[in-house]
Image (cartoon, rainbow, N blue to C red):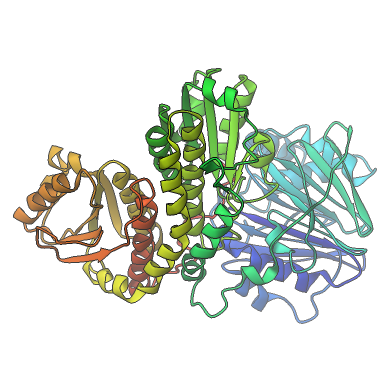
Length: 605
C-alpha cells in the first residue's frame, strides 16, 4: 500500500527521500510527494503518477532538511495532484504524510469546516494536519497526541513543523513505521528497505506509540504519554539485495533466487539425529503439541494458498485435522477460539492488516498462535511471539514467488516436526530429510529450463479465459498458478478442483479456453487422465505440469518437473507456473513488477 519515508540530519533530505520513495515503489501507488523545511518555510512538491514524474517536477534548487515523502494508493479521493500527500495546513506551516484510513474523517471534516477551515483535497488524511494546526502552541508531539485522541482509524503518520525543524514526530496504529538509527541522523519509513543503504539499525514502533525524532536520537511513548523502551535490531540483508542486477524484472530475479532462498529456510533445521526438523522459534513443548486437536491457518492471497498446502501437509504427516481460511473473513464470523487448537498466521510482510487483526482477535480470546513470516521484527512476528521465519530475503515484485515457495517449505518442516512427535516413523522422517536436501538442486533444474516454459506461454497469450485444475494438493498449486496469472498478466484465470469440472464449469470449455492441469504421478493420476479426456472431447486445449513418464493421452503442451517425495511434489510443481505467468505477462507487455491496482503489502482493510 502507501509508503512513507522521512529524514532528519545535516544532509539535504531531498535525494535521500527520493531514493527512499524509489525503494518503496514495489508497494503499489498512484501518486507521490515530498515536503522539506528550508529557512523556516515549507517546500512541497507532489503529483499524480510515478516517482520519476515527481523527480522531473522538482524545481532545480529544491532542497531542505528535515523532510518527509510519500507514495499514495488511493482510498479516499481519486488519484490526482490535489489528493497526493503531503497535506498542509492553511498557513502552510505543518505538513503530514499518512498511511491508513481515518474512519471518522467525515465528522471531523464537518467540524473543521464549521470553524472556517478550507480543505484542498478529498482525502481523509487532510483532517489530521488541520487538527494538529488547531491545537494550542506547545511541543509538536503534544499537538499530535491531542489530534490522534480525536481520531478513529489506522495510521502510520509523520508530521513536519517547518517553524521547528529540529524535530519530526511519527506515530503508528495499524500501519507500520520503522525508525532507522544513523550517525547523528535519523530515518523512518513504512519499510526499512527505504533507508537500508544508510543504516541497518532499526526500531519498530508498536500500535499506539509515538516517536519524537531528532538528528541525535529518538524518544518513544504511548499516545497517552507513557514512556516506552525500544531495543534496536540489526537488519541482516543489504541494499544490494534490493537491486535487479542483470535481470529485466524483480520477479524474474526472485524466481531465480529460490534455490538459495530455500537453502536459507532449511538451514539449521534438518535434525538427522532424531529424523525430524528443528524449529527453535515454535517454542511449544512436545506435550503441548500432543494436546493440540486441530490446527487453523490464516492468511491472505498467496499466504492463504500456502496455508492450504500447509494444512494438507499437516494432516498427511502430523495426522492432525488442519484447515486454512482467509484471514480477511476470519474475525467477522465471530470465530470460536478453542484452547486445544493451534492457530498459524501467515504473512510475507508480517504487516498484512487483516492477518494482524485476526491474530489480535485470537489472542484477545486466549488462543495460541504462531506466525510464519518473512520480515524479521515485523508486527505479526512480534504479536505472535513465536513461529518460523522463512528467511527468503527481500521480495520487491508485487507478486509473491520465493516467499510462497519458502512458506510452503516452512509448512513442510512444521508438518515433519508434528509428525515425528506423533506417529511418523524414523524411516519416513529420513525419507523427508533426504527430499529436503535434494530440493534446492531440483529447483535449480526447473529454473534452468526457463526457455521450455516460455514456449507454453503461447497457449495463453491470446486467450481471454483459462482454467487451472488439480486434485488434492494439486488444487492448491492450481489456485496459486491461476492467481499469479491474474495478478501479473491480467488474464482471467479460474482455479477449480479437477473433480468438480463436470459439476458445471465443463460448460465453458471450448477451443478458445485452455486448461492447465497439475498432473503429478500419484494415486490420482488415472483420475486426472479421465478429466483430461473429458476436456479433449470438447476440443479444449490442455497443458500439463507433470512428472517424467509415458503420457496415455494427447496434450497440447507439457512441462516435466523432477519427482520428489509426494509431500514435497507440490512445491516443485508450482515453480513452472510462476515462470508461465511471467512469460505470458512479458508477451502482453505488462508492468510485471507493479501490476495495476495491486500493492505488495496490504496494510488497510
